[in-house]
Length: 292
Ligand SMILES: C[S@@+](CC[C@H](N)C(=O)[O-])C[C@H]1O[C@@H](n2cnc3c(N)ncnc32)[C@H](O)[C@@H]1O
Image (cartoon, rainbow, N blue to C red; front, side):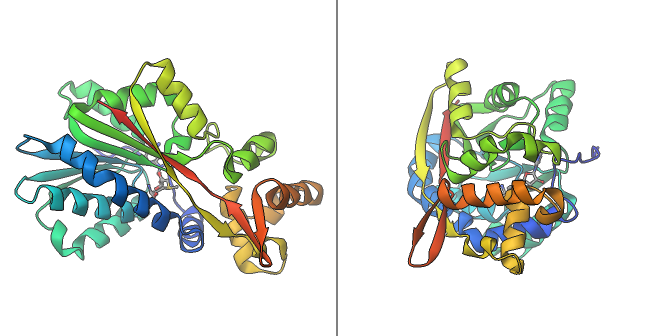
């Protein structure tokens, strides 16, 4: 059964805005460097002695990171069968993910189970069925901002881990440019956007893990990108970046001139570093591995 995707999942204008952001931010490249360093060792520990490996992606979007991680897992255990379950609320991004799988030769042997639904609906469905499929590796990349209850969500997905399993959460780092922007303008940003339940950074996730007494490891994912175009009102690139960074369809129409000016000042003065005529926005992430 496919539940109706809710408004937190990317549809409509959010899809091209997100893809535009990915092309300009170097975010996937930064994450890839981290996962290529960290995951081979983790996968060796996770998979030791297992005769099958089950992966769950939550909020996987177009699946670009999933495809790399599944390939890494497959090269660590070439003879072990792997399954992939994907919980993603956006039908458009899931179509892109399916197309990517279709053209990735080494993934043809992996069966994919597509759950096109909100992570909360997946949780309800699994609990109602009673027989929970457990996983060796679960990941939530840049999606935990959108869940209703951070603590309950982490508790549920961590409970789906098999022995030696890991839940990987990638999220904006505490005190990164995103954290400063969203915390400073929380009221203004929330007024026009109800998809993001609560702007969270790695600080909130780590506080939650400590509170639940869960064991975890942390890895930095350094990243920055040039936002100089955001300060040119006639630049389409700048405006599209601002739309995504403030989670609006149209940054200019959403805020008063005074709020726009203060946001732009904050972006330049508190969230970025200027060098060689460029304005590098601090987009550092954290990769957190929660133990099973
Ligand atoms: C910022 S994108 C990240 C996509 C992908 N993980 C990546 O890093 O490229 C957030 C993704 O989470 C999905 N999403 C948001 N809330 C969700 C929820 N509660 N359950 C499932 N998917 C959700 C969106 O549709 C979108 O694909």
